[in-house]
Length: 590
Ligand code: ADP
Image (tube, rainbow, N blue to C red):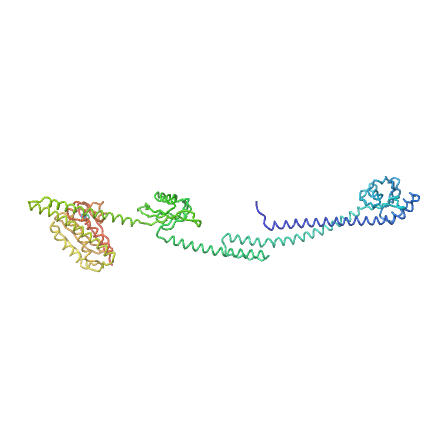
């Protein structure tokens, strides 16, 4: 039901009160007036009757009815009142307006009865004789204390009624004017009472809409002013608190969104309370749209779903790795902690996600590396052990056989030495790079290449491989000449190893727009496409036994890649199986 405004509650109430009051006053006033007029008329009639009593009593010794009647008629003609004389028997013997002979017995008239009982009788009723409403006043006429007759005076009260009616109309008119006046005043009062409340309501609506800077300016009663002040104070305090909350929320959001770790807050019904930018980026979701929705709907990752279920049911911190599959696999270490409200009730969980993809890859690489190293070392060691044991337990007479065994042992020892040498080289490189001790200087590339070629020439000549070097003297780059020399030696060494006899290796160095290219091109066995991507991994070899046979460690190209990285360059391969390979070291131009 629609509530009425305060004004429309107050004003009609005032009007009703006014109308009831005015009606009551009119009713009371007109009644009092009527009583007054009637009692005055009765008093006048009684007075007249008392004046006449003596005259009438004179005609009662003996009773002279005619004289009584004529006295009545005579005096009656002089006054407006009707005069009637009635015997105690009820017979009318004189009347100023009628022939008593035809008048009925009046004994049953109430005023007559009272008069006969020695009381002044007053009665108002309709006269059948005169066909008017009359007031009758009857007094006893006494002789020697004996009631000998009843003298009754009466007047029609129709005129009195009319008079009373006109006075009533005047009173009602006055009352109406007073009521209108009161209605006007009560209208003003109602407005004055309801207006501050209306203003208060408007102010409260402003506050409710969030405009807490609005000030209520209400004048009126002390209570209203006090209430307005209290509301203003409340709004100001609320505004301050809201500002503090907003500031804190903004600070929290800033912290939240600038965190590198992904953060997801969930309520106990698995609905998202908040997702920071890092987490949104990890799962490729919109953080704003995810709020209030189920985590299962927002993030489609079964590992995360399982983790959330466990974390919510356990109500204790959990952690686990979760794999996110987009185009690249991403490993996220996820921690969960329960969230509690002020009453220490668990209301959800907070997930903190750390991208550990690189870390896990490094761990894997390290693990693989250790396994590879162990494997690589184990093979020659097992061989050495076997041959040494054979030599110890089976003393050979044939020295040639012993020499053959020792040669094999030497080969494996050399291999071990080569592996350890390469590993040491790699770790030294890593260490020097980490400690920033590698200093790059602008130097001629030609001299580096010449030195590398001279180091490999002997091995090449053994296979009748011709090395051609083509590099202009002015080609320079910022390099560590020892390291670059080692990289080029490794490439030439491979070119020699994986080339057939009687072939040529072309070594070139030339500048392009953006880089200096050092290319080592052979006419060897080449490399199949599927191996090209993994060639620079440690211990990766296309043909293990062939590499071992040729004295390879599987670390040569890994060292090349590392050295080139130290020079902020990159290394690429172009190869056609059966035709040859070209390895290119690209160094930046400074
Ligand atoms: P390795 O000591 O076995 O030569 P590297 O790291 O130097 O190890 O090379 C890795 C692998 O790459 C080799 O085992 C070989 O299969 C291949 N490779 C390297 N250089 C060449 C090349 N010039 N021609 C053909 N294959 C090559």
